[in-house]
Length: 397
Image (cartoon, rainbow, N blue to C red; front, side):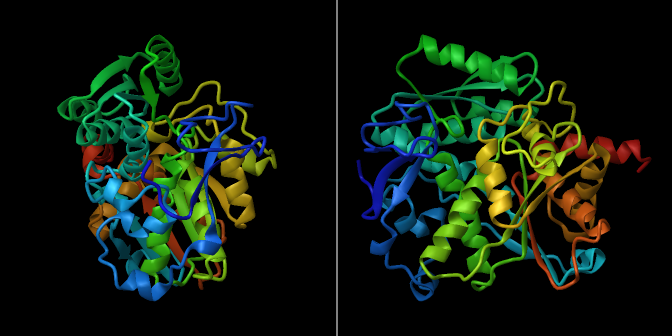
């Protein structure tokens, strides 16, 4: 494998065992726990000046903090997305600064490109011929795109309620798509059956592969660097499985270990009222979630009733003095519309949960006026423009 110098292998977050990344591809063979890439940070020489001298062209500019070399990466120049100042929204919310990290500008229109770039690089280096996953939509589109780039076949299991755009583009990228009736949990069940029947398939499922949160962590690197190494007070992620938050927490601790920043940002999970297992667990001081029996939200990308790594997500929130917030669908859709109309930025319904969550936090009096707040937009609004327009029409617009 073409790995970076500081990458030392994979550690199980549950039992603590260590493994050679060339030998282990997915979960811990001892306890089936999640594996996490590890690094010898003492060997990494990376400072602000070095990064400032590099082109802001892709997530692979942070190569020293990734498992694989830039030369070996399966990449379409994902990452390096805009961090947009929104002063009018800041005034409305009563904070010092409000910025939107617009990851909807990634090649397939979502932040999932970051994780799939790293995961498909791993699959390629492990000699895979086929990759597979269950997905609410964006992850499958990204997997199909990067699998095509790597010359691999992809197999996506998608709930029938996934957006037409995602399903169409999975096929356009050459992916094999299996539409499953029901919701995401049903797609996971069908995916697991497919994986059991096809031993040659290589899973790029969140937290089954150790690498998707490694790509996701680069979002926070870019946020902090874009703020000239000032750590924001609050970073709000729309949250389903929680890959973004787990990656962000790892990124924040890595920047601190390297002496690039002094503190950690407060990480917040934003969900929809109709499916908010992370928010419920956080508010009730539990270490893990309780599965939502009947999820019901228009935000299909984050409608994850049974997130597999909730303990790691909750750890990220608590260790950074962050929080969790859930809002109703109509408020989420309205937040997307308001951002589009007043700031010109396009948020799909699911990531608009983060914007709606910030409004809710402001109404609760959580801010004192001095904060820098970052909302992470994980998917372009044009993926589900029909849903946003339908909301407008229901309001008589």
